Length: 253
Image 1 (tube, rainbow, N blue to C red):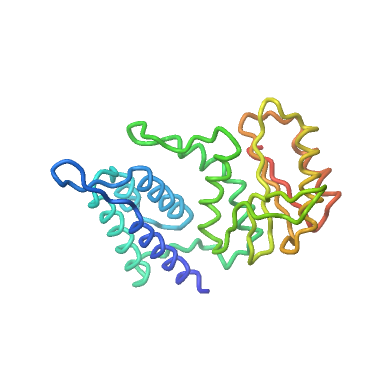
Image 2: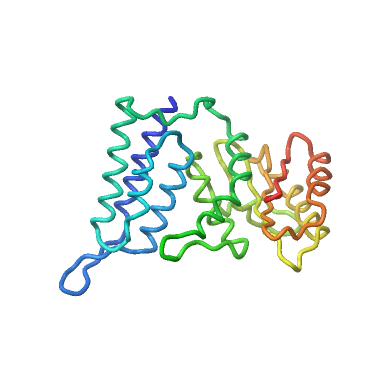
């Protein structure tokens, strides 16, 4: 698909998602909207716009300024996106990065993992200290990663069952069906040693090698506190033992 068409299609999908936000009537029949749904939708839009080139600052600021109070806030965001689509279609905005071609899934995932910590940190900075997603455990990492994956991948399957291994079936974190790629997510904690992490990943690798849809495994380890003593050693040992199948990202470095 042409990159310009792909961007427009994604923006239209984001507009359509706004129609799923719950609208309810409150006191004096004044309509209100679900703040949590609205904020999640808006954050997803802002993250996507941040991946594009030459998006006007006034568009970003207008979307950020909507306060998740009334249906008009949804319509205001939709209006900004529709205007942006028209500008892209008419050639007034070239939002494709100059060096960008149709990048492959490996490059997309590498960029995503490399920038994950910056995104997580940016989400903590909200206007008027509003509620946001705070990455405190592995489930939080999975939730944010899932949202980011949907920007570039159409078929993202969370918690897919793997074949029986060591006496029982288990779940993988994410399967990119079309790319035949599995993503396993870990978040370090004070009780997890480097040895513990390495042993867990070895089990995961052996398990996923049996899965018929897994031709490549990505292990994303989020270590915001820098608890791992030798992340490069862990990465090199595992990747060297499973070349052409495994890539390990321990971030931030």
